[in-house]
Picture 1 (cartoon, one colour):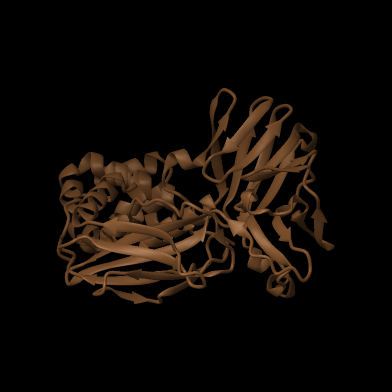
Picture 2 (cartoon, one colour; picture 1 turned 90 degrees about the horizontal axis):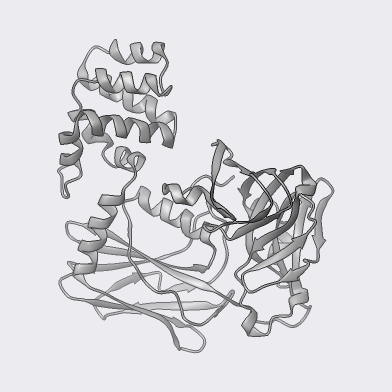
Length: 392
């Protein structure tokens, strides 16, 4: 089950509806099940994923995200006649008849002569995989009218023996990792799946990666083709070759590491087709870009991310916890017994350590509430920890 793609941005958990925003509730952190109440008839879209619903009347929908590798038969995955073309969703609705249409996102470029009859919606049910022809295919999604509800996603069924190169929309992500002795970048080339981008963002944030602003490849690239990452002569790039393929959000995504040493001058990075040698993407990274990105990441870091980033510093530097514990109890993060358990620890360091461990186990929302309380009651400590280049 996917757990790492979740965004820390509140706007991520919102549908756009006919009268404004509709909140999405996370009702089960494991395995990440979301609940949405569509209050009235209309068209609703989740911009962060591309998933959409045409609703006849008030409806409740529960959905989660699954991994293709856990449900699609290995033999089918290795068969050149099948290609994963979008995310895999588990969707349930009540009442079922309230949903007139579902819009499932895909990343296949229709400008490349792809036969629309190749698009199939795969339903994974008790009896196995069942294929359904979509009602229609649009540039970024397929439409199912009067849908049945199941674990579902889009597959492309290619005519046997054609061995066609399928053009897809793709994106290039580049993350900066600062280091006292030099700079390192992670470069990804992946299909244009918003959930995939969210997952990579989350994974990179865990390791202090800062995403730089870049443009995606202008033209569609061929799914399954190989591309070469290159740059200035002094750069060390490992590996230099990337294959444009799809792995579900939450699975390990392939990337190239680029080592630069101390970055005092701009560097140029390129991605070129291995077969044709044509450049499909390029960017210029300047030292000032790194400074601005690092500053932006620091200012927009969520409370939960701040706590995880500064875990050891908080263990060592937090003082009187009385007010923070009162806030956590008031917000139902801690019970009275849990609050007393922290207070009874023999030393300040142990009290700090116990508090952090207990809050961390309760999840992202608890960490955000803890951060808010700490920021209100000890703003000087929070301000100090937000400074760059603190000692470990």
